Amino acid sequence: MQLSNVLVIGGGGFVGSHVVSRLVERGLRVTVPVRRRARARHLILLPTIDVVEADVHDDAVLSRLTQDQDAVINLVGILQGSRGTPYGPEFAQAHVELPRRIVAACGTAGVQRYLHMSVLGADPLGPSMYQRSKGDGEALVRASRLDWTIFQPSVVFGPEDKFLNMFAQLARFFPVLPVGGAEVRFQPIWVGDVADAFCNALGNHDTFGRAYELAGPRIYTLRELVEFAARASGHPRAVINLPGAAARLQAMMMEFAPGEPLMSRDNLDSMKVDNIASRQPYEPAPELQIELTPMEAEAPVYLSGENPRSKFASYRARAHR
Image (tube, rainbow, N blue to C red; front, side):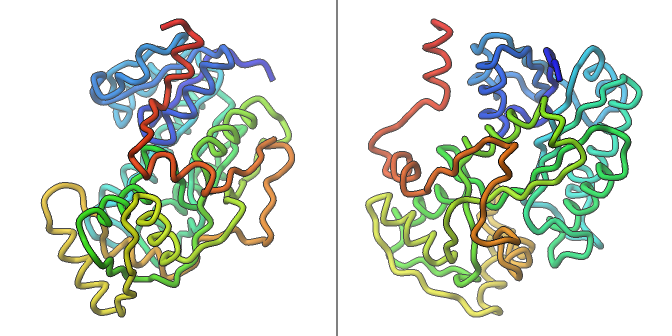
């Protein structure tokens, strides 16, 4: 499948920035809509990329963006939102209404190829608003007539992640780290592997109409991940497993703290089920052409804070910029 122009919605975010960089490296022309262009400074200098200020929740704007595109990638996702049944308005807008709008815009513009970021555990009947909204978004994509591919990653780690970095930061200030759900299991995957999966699937007919779980080579409990992040940051700490009521109280207090919450009650609800691949040992589908990167090989580099790396330095160097 020959592709030249790709619209990446959510391309300025953590995973999106890595996906965009790999697309650019492959010579594709990439359009990335963002709310504020200044927040995508790390992308602007890359060749063959057009960063535009746009509101993707506006149907007219979305219709204009999808014109003359060969494919659309949707990476939009939020972890926090107000409460509601089955989920709050922020989850509805980001995970359900936006995919609905994108699918409709693709149909109008004649764009057939669509890649969608979901999550392990996405389920319209799942225990958290996050999982329920992601599940409903998936259902909309599956029901479309597009050549879609859905990716369902476990927690994604990388230099800009808000998971391992959060625990590493907390370890610098607190002698003990109390967490809820310490025995819940995760299967973290390197952001570069996720980006490669998207890019390798983009023009591959074998991936059409399929959903792929994405997970790393090893399973960890949350306790093990927190201990790993603390140790890698140079501040090894003891981890205390908070019982249910105490964990919920802690999360509720964090929700009302200034800024973006480190933890919410909905995050705890998501941890009522393990976040691991359904088949173990996990092996990525061969058509995705990815080799799984161990967490121990990459995470200590950025968690230590001693060897900062620009995530796009290599791409800029190759472009002589």
